[in-house]
Image (cartoon, rainbow over all chains, first blue to last red; front, side, top):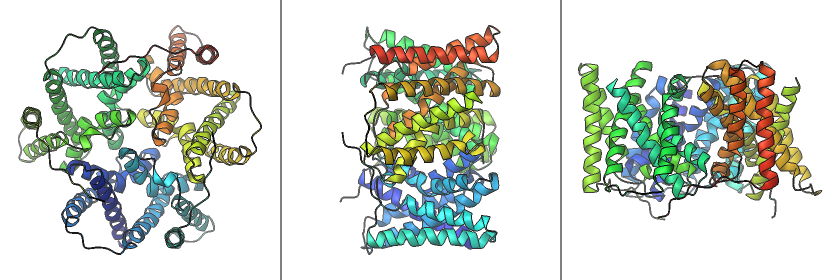
Length: 203
Length: 203
Length: 203
């Protein structure tokens, strides 16, 4: 139950990031809702489709859709009278949502198959996939492919999660260890502006 | 049967819109067929995949593929000797195709699940999804996300359709009410150049 | 078994082409692996999803993933001390991978449905789909849509393959005739810089 609430919290935060990008691109309300939806549920949708877990999760439980709709319209209303948030509020919320999404992706994929490697990929896909599609729709090279310890945090979290499972820890402990490691690494990256070195070929 | 013919009509119109964009981008014949196909069957394909209705519809009934192939090659031949069409012919045909696609999407999703909200989303996806992927392939920010009462017409049509079903009207009446409302709103938008206000954040 | 090795060879070659593009875009190691994966398994993934053959092939057999990971890291290491390859090595390897991917796509789709047209499409999708998604992520108009006898080679190969099957030839002969015709046409196109005429609409 607590997990479900955190999952919805992540959905809200991701939806807001879609709304903000749509606003910078001057989209109409439909575009705003599409970008919010894609960011919030795009990753989980690709995970479910690849696993064959169809109909996808937001068809089975439409709560996610209502939450996204409400978030989109509230954000569009509120943003016109901007009370300044501290700069760190959104990234930190995003990190929490990200960490939980990765954990849920790892978990769900373990219901459908056995490989830890696939589970880690599904975790990363759940966490980062929505943002990638959002950036494609906005015609930008997806940020997570270019820099910052974002996907890397997800990968490490997935490794902790699956390793704990393999070492025989119970489900909750493994989940928590994965989510916390994603979260800590991501918060550290935000705090100290960590980036991986890029791989560049000159031409 | 009549519905099936209208469905194929919509397929043809959408395919033509893909061919025309491919021509402006100077693609080769393969690119033309890909853009035509993506526009015509991309939305329905995403709908079927999300619903778990696989193999997708054009694998079960290959008529759609043959129609797209024929349309692509005929359009490529004919367009070289342009007889001018009145400006409104293509948008009006597009509106008819759009309205029918939305109705079919709502209908099909109701076979696989019960939520009206999901049915509306599947209707919009069937109508607008192909055009969005077409624009991504052409490296443009999808037009339907930016302006004009296009997706909005689909949403309203989907609401009429599902509401009529919930109020106990029979299948055909509900379908017709949905298709007609999409069509009327879309034709009105074309006639009077209606747009929703955009949501813009200045930075 | 030999086929499986060639399939992995194609995976490696396609992964390398993803790594090289990621390097030109100065992506971080995660981005490199994503672009390598998308190029190498993106086409087959879309094929499996459309056919309803889920979980997709790389979930069932994770060898592909390990091969991509190893290829990505080795390429990143090696490319920093570039020994010059002759210009034709990569395109020729790519042509071999392409031809085999098309054959595998045709084959697999015949397990799930009967239409030759769909089988050809699935072959082309398996061969070209990954490169298209790679180019979308890199924010380029997909090269295969624009010029060169690339997709066309796949189409002709698919036609040979399915025609041979329909004429009653055994599975291996049909497979080989398809793969060889794709390969020969593609190599010819590389050697003599063949392109189809583009379809251009002036505006």
